[in-house]
Amino acid sequence: MADAVLDAKGLNCPLPILKAKKALKDVPSGGTLEILSTDPGSVADFEAFCRTTGNELLESSSGDGVYKFLIKHT
Image (cartoon, rainbow, N blue to C red; front, side):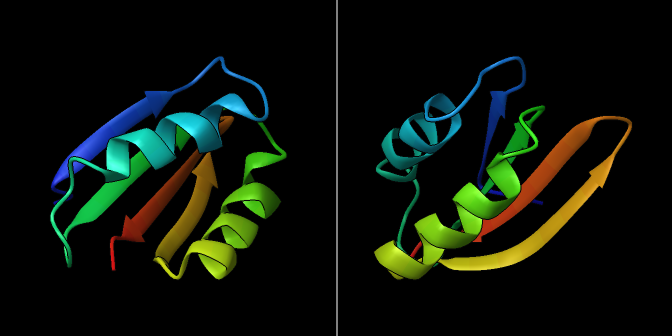
């Protein structure tokens, strides 16, 4: 189970990334943030976000039009 969950469903780029960046500030180092999004572009966005920030993308999945990401805060 994630330390925090961000529901970004219904938001389009760049809002899911911006809200995730803000939410990660409240997640302790080593903790996890789960993000739920309906924006298909968020898949590539969160991969790039983790590469550039050094956070670890632990999981990326989709189902029923919802994309789920699990990010480990480093």
